[in-house]
Image 1 (cartoon, helix red, strand yellow):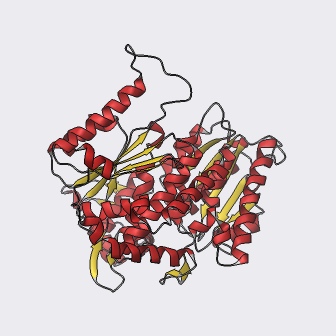
Image 2: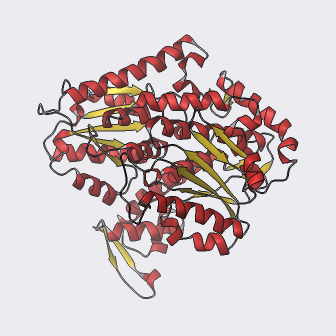
Image 3: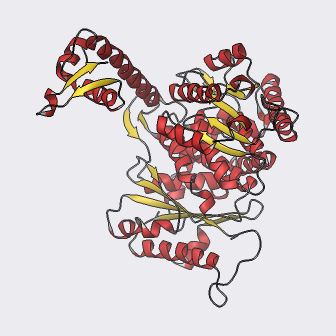
Length: 519
């Protein structure tokens, strides 16, 4: 790529410590001009969003995650007070935990935190925990239940062996009805009971007012509860109690995270496209994917601390943009698939395909200028390990360009609470702007609810199959007929029950003649 094109299409904001290189996306000279009118509409849409417009007509709610770092922008005094009071409450609670003012059921100090949540209730907190944690300095050790996998829960509980009596459990669910989170709550409560510990004196809820979880927390007398508001979606919830509480308990600077997000918001509110990094990114996504998600986004941060950034972006981008219908009701099947790991690990994993295989992607490199706190040793004369890391990033970028593979590079000075807050806010804005460009609603997710409904159907069929076995043994086909259920689903359920010793199985050939019997 030419130096001239780089100079023309490199955005730098010294105040933010942010660089954005879009020169390696091969858009023509007239592209930005052609997209200016739709971009201005996108700016107007985002301004209306921040002013309290109903952005999710399915649920008749506003979308106000921007107010979390600028409460003065909230459309009512009530909301402003709620945001400010909750932040103060989070910081006060964390201080009381750290000082030992609030103690465990046995009078000890809390040393560990178990966060129980899924999706946005876990992905953001996990990103922050990994990106900003410092084992030697963290005030508490944070672990997660982020699935309904019993073996996964056992793994985490094993890591807490001998520490359960010092563990604070934070259960996060807006509705309080999310099954995966409910299951994690029940499993963790059972672990406390087995250890002879009153779990209520260790449990904290982050949930909506009046939710199922809120009711449980109040009826059992949990230690504390924090609000989740209906105007904050799960994938944009990191900077409310969902993410701020675990971060504060870990001892991280949540004020700096909020300040970084606020700074980025201020810059990305600009209606000057060329001076707005979120607008430039949205336009690059639009060009790279033909405005219809025709290519995947590969996220390659050259920093171990940002390993989980691609996982975080998967939900933010794919749940926001993966839509069947546009705002006019037309079938468009929009979306951008996101995957990635970290550099230079990826060079030994899949860069070979990126360079020479099917060209169905564009890359986002994330460059971090500062290598570490303190000086680095020289592994060769005048060369450090950080120099090699930069060399691999720059070399991979050039190797991809040689094969006309498109890439974007985001450069930040360092990984810190402020810069992580900036990155979170940047991508939240990009998603909103891009959604406007392609005429979809980024703030509802009917597909997620469809998956939950299907899962509930499986549980219903399980109960029917067990009832069918009460009247006699049978093959999967026979029991499915009795239960009036799908044959394949019935087979899978029966196999699972048998593997876990909850029914017996007499294996026969062919395999579908195997007999299942209730115990």
